[in-house]
Length: 105
Image 1 (cartoon, helix red, strand yellow):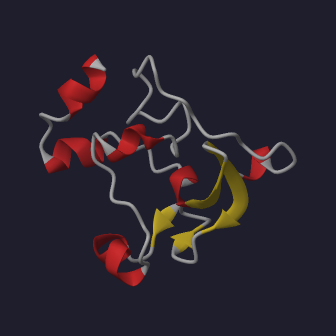
Image 2: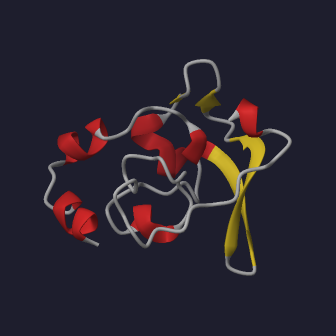
């Protein structure tokens, strides 16, 4: 909780710098009975080689449903547990990774 409070005071630039550009948040997820599961399907705008979004400034316009991360949305359970946005959150519940395709993410 303390980490979420501290991150709320970061500038937009400081917040963006927390990202390691792993691209895992840009894979499709399934919400099944309140548990989030990753799939091995990347967003069509994710460059899987560079792991960068091809339409980053306009991502939520280009792809309705794309979630812009902020301290509140980062806590919703769709980021990997080692993501810097949530790594220090004691009560964070990370998504389940696909077992067969884990190395691809």
